[in-house]
Amino acid sequence: VAPQADLSITDHASDWYFAVCAIMTVSTLAFMAMSMGQPRGNRLFHYITAGITMVAAIAYFSMGAGLGQAPINVEFPRPGSAQVGSAGSREIFYVRYIDWFVTTPLLLLDLLLTAGLPTATILITILADEVMIVTGLVGALTSSSYKWGYFVFGMLAFFFVFYQVAIVGLPAARALGAQPGSVYLRCGVLTLGIWFLYPIAWGISEGGNVIHPDSEAIFYGILDVIAKPIFGFMLILGHRNIAPADLGL
Ligand code: RET
Image (cartoon, rainbow, N blue to C red; front, side):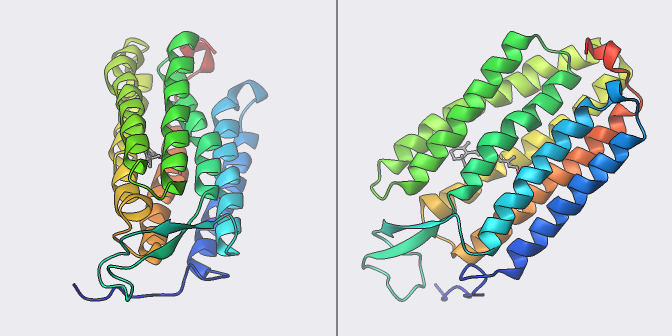
């Protein structure tokens, strides 16, 4: 296996991380500006979505500065690295998980409120989501192969979230009318399609130590831009044609 390119973008003051920080910041300002064109009672989805990108902007600021990370011991360094077969270390950006712990429940709230689901259904889905993120964090910080145990718990929680969004949410959104049905379908498909790639990124980064942390930065960065700002614009533009009262809000 050829050595993997070391782009030195996870060392310190990374332009890539700061670029994603800028995208998140500009999106936050755009969502707040868009809210001003609406009566106060119609701003719920703008506020939730702006909160999501604001938290991400701060997480990316931290990672750009080389902060919010800690090294863990890795027994089998990635293929191609000079340390193959020996012990080494890998930086784990735990600040991602602090971001996700706050923002993934808000993303689910955006989606599940659009489907008008009962409070109990929304709460249990968010609880499963928090289990998914925390097991991912603890697994990422674990050096021994017990980390894969945490990954399995996280995947089980993820399947529960997936089920609620796909099987429970879609018919509920459609029952509310053509507009909520179509916004939910578009945003839901985007969400499930993108969220599915996170455990894959985890498996080859924090999990298996297969790709360089620089590649991890690019992988998660692209996913985060699609899952937060792009999802957010789709959702907010879709809600222009839906009255909050139609969703029971
Ligand atoms: C982990 C590892 C444990 C198993 C699973 C995971 C899924 C994470 C997901 C994260 C989504 C993050 C988003 C961030 C927005 O910018 C924790 C990686 C299933 C789905 C949408």
